[in-house]
Length: 483
Image (tube, rainbow, N blue to C red; front, side):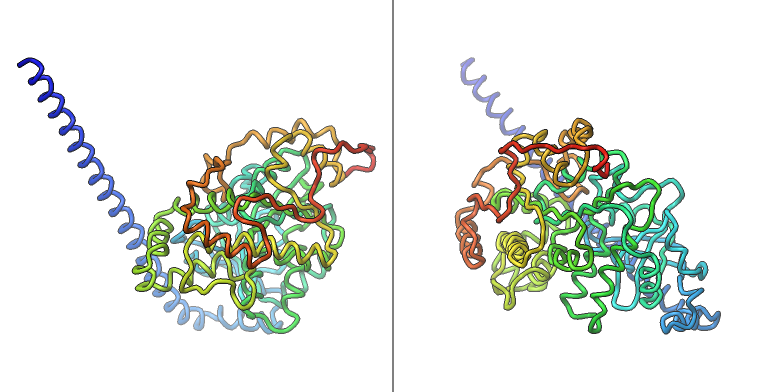
């Protein structure tokens, strides 16, 4: 009898726990749904407000002469007043990691300034359109370059900290960039596949005194997309990219060396960077294909919209009903670097195939530049992590940085990017094939084969890969070093 009561009591406890867990899951689901609804409604209200403000501004700017000054500046008639400073009173992004765009802000007219205004330390390049160059201005004392917060991309810090939006027509931009001339300090240029440890490398460089770090400036990203979509007139892009680099790397009393890390799509710019600035040190960071794709899938679910998107993308029924999701995914991650015609039909694309194309096309683009003779140093993340101290020493020797700073730089390897979702990187995932189901792995292998690359997870060495194992004679003459 006692045994029966104990058994009955245990059964009731189990049922009670099960019910409580069920109710807890329902509560979490309802809270998530409420968050999604609030996000969507807030963004809808933001876009509605923006439409009303822009409509009203068309009238007020025409009456007050603001629009006339803007048009004259666009045609080169108002050079001394070609910079339009606007106050930001509301900002909104649907996805925090989406590419920088002037529509991220609702602004009002503030003043017209001389083009030299954009050379202020508090003003930085934000993005570019086919007609204008967009800058943002932050308060005095605020550093958005990434030197103090290297994990957070520059475009996120600019979006969060800016108090003014500044527009400049292309003719004025070309003149200022030409007058400024080439960067006056050495530059390290880091291209990468994404989710490959490049942010950790930026953290390492940020520890060095006199190093100015720029993590993912989106002016380069927007340039890559505009060029891919043929939005520029002939010869315009060839002027805009070097101009953007000159303005990004404008004189700064803090900088004795500058490190620029780009978004993955900007790998396409490595050849153009070399043609215009052959003395820039170019590094290319990549990682094992399986780990990169698994990390991309893991990060892809961090934001509410991405979670919903992945569910739709990997469902045959829902992706057929909402084909725009696959098109958006392809445009965001694959379109700039993918081959022509595309390797995979967008109608059949899943999240795994999209991230596989993104990785493979990035590697293939780097190989094209290696074969073309562009001097770059490929870095494999797994090799770098075997001996971080040796990695720092080899890199410093290549970049002509004094070995005295190796201990300081080592601190960058200790920072965990997994605790910082805005970093755009994740911590090292376990090498587990369970992350990607068998059917999707087969699909990924098929895509990699079309690019001439080995199967998912197999080691691949780009020609000229940095060797961190073989000791070299270290010619560390301090007077020959930049830092």
